[in-house]
Length: 296
Image 1 (cartoon, one colour):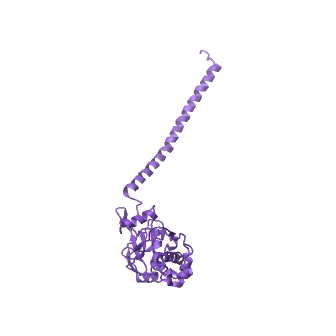
Image 2: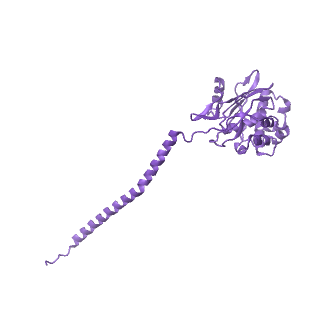
Image 3: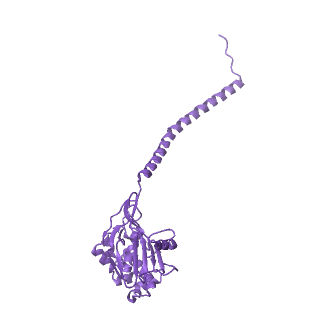
């Protein structure tokens, strides 16, 4: 047999380079296989999520949900709200009000020759739900509500299903002031949005645009002297309570509900008194109202 020739050093180096290159190619191929093995499932997950998002948008999933349909407020609730003892209101004073009525300098707001309180809200709105209790308590010191309803805020918004009143369909009589309550949408969903209730006049829209350019609700204009935008106290204190429980708590000045609602009612009362010439004196000079007026 012919003798085998031992590879030269140069040939050995070349062979080593070729083997290293081949090894690198094998490693690269292995990495590509791993990437495919891991990457494809990740891509599938991403695509599935994207499809779910599209389906959610297309089917309307996540749209607002209807709340409890408004009914006539019970006599127990109406009596408790419209006749909160003066002693409870005076003890609460400024209460736990977070946002005070803000002074404004515009034309006087009036209707039928009397200072006017304009309320703009919506039944689905949780902040409106909180504020209505206080407005009803405050204005009941100057006059009488008829036809107040009770409902709850949206179950799909913050502070879900907050028990509240509604001014839609209600009327108000007083020799001191006029009240207009507009609930622009209900808490009932129709075709993916809350159904329209009350329509704003051109003047009401102008006031909302002038003083609350963001269109936030509730919006309250008190005689053209003060305005409120949003809830005056934390709606959280009402969570988990029924209409009857909230109404009953208004007479207990130690209750967090009373501190929020009655405190706001005193602030609203003080703002109203600025438009009525501090009449009636029995209301406007009450210690709870005086305490709230110092915060304005």
